[in-house]
Length: 136
Image 1 (cartoon, one colour):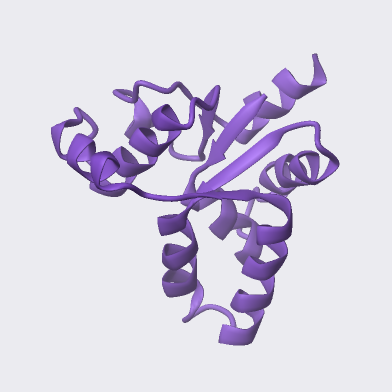
Image 2 (image 1 turned 180 degrees about the horizontal axis):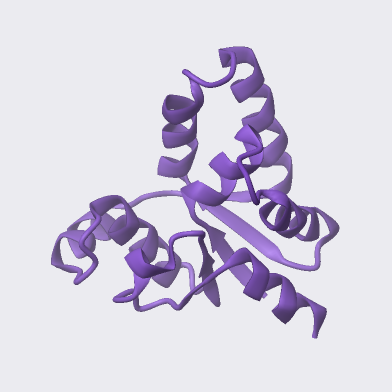
């Protein structure tokens, strides 16, 4: 299974937000090769920005560097951005994620914010659902 992990999945794991355990397990499955995991390049920059006020810059950098050993990074192309402008997804960042996911042909977008991806061309699933699918 090929998954694009939405930014909130990674933020939850690094910051150990309530309920992060399933997201962490999903990343572990990526590490073990049971899932082919991706994050977008914008996710990396967003994580660095979002978490700078919650943990030290060094901790964020170390966490992201560890993730880069496990997950592949998807570039964001001009075509992804222009397609996102035309998307029915209201949140622009999520629209860009969806366009990247479609371009690299992942099976799902794993997110803790399913409602924001209801108009995505790539189906969005929760970490819990992704774990169920891996178990089959």
